[in-house]
Image (cartoon, rainbow, N blue to C red; front, side, top):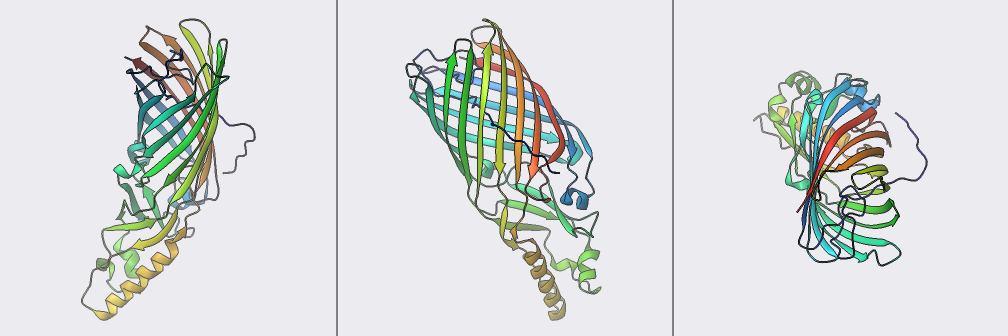
Length: 357
């Protein structure tokens, strides 16, 4: 799938540093900040419709063009104002896609954000640094025989939504309010640390390995799970989010976000063979294992871009409680045909409950 989109991209963090300079109290405002000593929670529950991309890897898996519905997603953002300018925040999300047999936590982050310039200045300026917590959960996948072996004999079916790698995120944000209109822009870089925090279950039929050995019974030499050594990556995000305060109760929001997801690279495939006690069989298993390593190491060419459009409407129920409805449409474009994260259609809608204490 090739989709091209030109133009400015835009995102606002839902978290900002605590400020004593009349920071916005509307929690949907892209410049919202918890006051010193205050806590906030933003909980979103959404449902998504997806159509799987028609690319090379999905054709090999036999999933090209399939519809996936419903895909449930839950997001949680938490924050606490430490000082007038410094705040702590955390975020996590959970996705459940039963059609793809894939579910799990994602987007775990914990960090600090500092407000360099307050509303007394021409604009607000924040800088932030986070720990990315994708390493808390092991990346899980199944190694299976492809439904279209002419394209690719073996494929990974991902079982969850984590990379299995810890990382760090650094970024900055600028924003300003003009009467009832607010806008904020940001840019950030996410560096992941390479590791082997993954578990790939070997679901390939014994007949496949035996056939590679000319019919010799060597399948028993291959482990039930495999690990791969992944190299570090650098991802990028940039964007802008805006909000119009209609009156004291109602507000409208809109955003356009760009995310760059780098290609993953495999440094080594760890296949710990079991000895069969026969030099010929053990030698044949080693030769096949080395061939599998060589075929899967290096650049996986699975990187992709995301272009995310979001619109929302919110109502203030009280000083401390707000509800919002949102709709989101995502266009994505892979660098090559090996990404299992691109789609032909990706639409989500949901509701959000915002609380502050």
